[in-house]
Length: 129
Image (cartoon, rainbow, N blue to C red):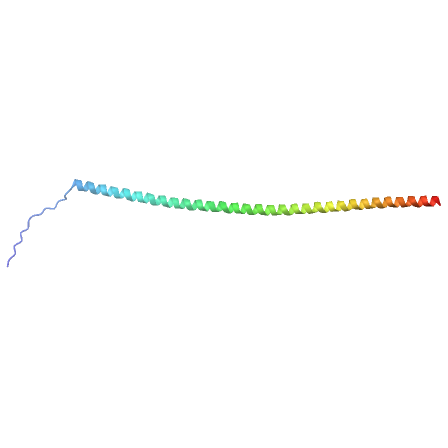
């Protein structure tokens, strides 16, 4: 058997289909825009997350500062109360001592008066005899 092959001259050329090429370019452009939008949203989310973390850290530091300030204020008030108690006790003791001094002076005055009366009575009795 014989086979006969006829080769036709085929010329391969680049076929251009402007309408299809334009659609491809539009799809590529749309894909690029979508990718850009997705990347911008991703970057925005990262930035918001970092800002949130920074704000939280700042809030935490501020709260810690307020806590330390409150503790310092409480210690200061404790010292002030102790001081006032000591002053009050000192004033009370001084008042008690002043009261004792007044009582002692009153007793002394009464004793002196009683002695003077007894001396006068003794003189009067002695003169009457």
